Amino acid sequence: MQRLDRSQPALILVIWCVFLTLPVWGQGTFPPIRDAFIAIENTTLIDGTGAPPAGGVTILIEENRIRQIGPTGELQIPSGARLINGRGKYIIPGLIDAHVHYSAPFLHRLYLAHGVTTVRDVGTAVDKILTLREEISVGNLLAPRLVVSGMGINPRSVKSGGFESARAMTEYLAERGVDGIKVTGYTLDELREIVEVAHAHGLLVYGHTRIDPGALAAVEAGLDGIEHVTDLMEDCIDENPPLPSNFDWSNREHFFKYYYGRLNRVVNLDKVDHLIERMVANDVYLDPTLINHYRGFVVRNTPELEADEAFRYMPKQYDRANRYGIYGPEERAEWTRTLSLMQEVTRRFYRAGGFLIMGADSQAAAPDGALPGWSMHQELELFVKAGLTPMEVIQVATFNNARVMAREKDLGTVEPGKYADLIILDENPLTEISNTRKIHRVIKDGLVLEPDILLAEHIRHFGERGSN
Ligand SMILES: [Zn+2]
Image (cartoon, rainbow, N blue to C red; front, side, top):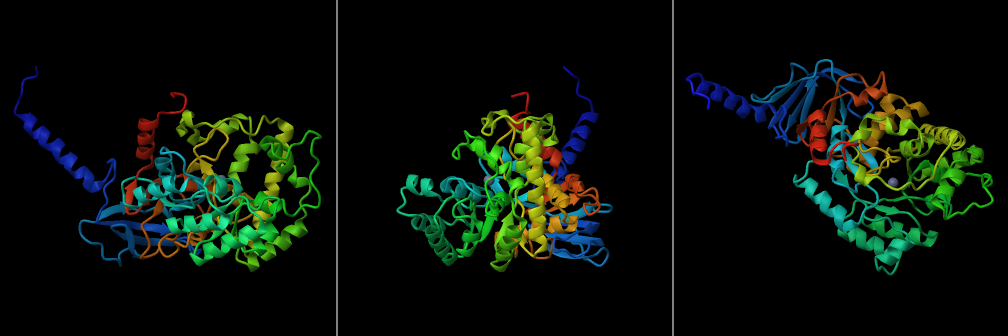
């Protein structure tokens, strides 16, 4: 047994003091503790409004709201405020993923670690997703803010839910308190009724338009938003692409490999422009979801699919069965052309003044799904490759996404009065959009989060891919 000596109480005191001061600094603590005031000093702000970056500013946060922003030195910083040196750093609003499937608990930390501070779920059982929204909003769970749609409306879900009609299901979801209505299958008459009920509750209706009734008819019937740019494109073809003789429309693999994959051969861009014009006239948004198609098809069955840094955080037990078949070089080349066309249509829509938003379609499904959090950065990059500027895509992923959720008073930009949801970047995202991945800290709801600690916590709970 070690002999006690007189230096030990002093040592214990020092350790104890360090321990006590940790929560004050918040460094390395988990779960994090909210500071009364935070000042990010002398930094460069890209606020999400589209305004040019402002250098030499200080951002003062009080509890979970941004209180003041102004030139460094002119702002009164309350004593005891936690100070963050923002010199050489860049601030952007927290990213919002407008299309996720929030189907597993391991997603919480992955979104936050990648700077995604709000997500919109577009299809989960309403009881489950409302409970999750509540747990997060009262602070029981450290997770991104959650905006919900409940289950998507289609003939199958109407029937299995025991509803009399699509109208009755819409009424039910609206009364339960969802934030919007997702539709995945309907007749035009049903869509008109869904829209009527949803709009009376102040909710948007969005989702698939698929082949029947098609995007143009759905837009004219009052649909507010189209998920997946492929839905738009398939309503703008002159004839079906060449399909194999054994082609089966109800076979998911066939549909994506041959019909969607070969869409690039038959899309008529004049029809696309006309549809875009009608979408702009009716303020119908477009959520292209590019990265899920890139990961799902363009790099299918290649090592690139699993090469992303974030892949090792995907717990293997959530892998989904292969639903899209095996791809060779020919199928991948075909999809490469279709993805370029998806990007071209996205660019045309945006340049025509369209209400463009951004979702990665991320979910708890590896290996060929979009990766939670990480894929939002890939989506930003695909939008820039489509021809938007980094400033424009940041605005789409923050301000526009807040607007589509009717949360623009609280979210989407870094401005006084808004929630303190932002990312502190080590490098300038306007010179290279992939710099949005170089995250120093994430602040969500006034909590300062360190990506490394969130990821370590994630691995502690769910293990690392390969080890499970
Ligand atoms: Zn989806």
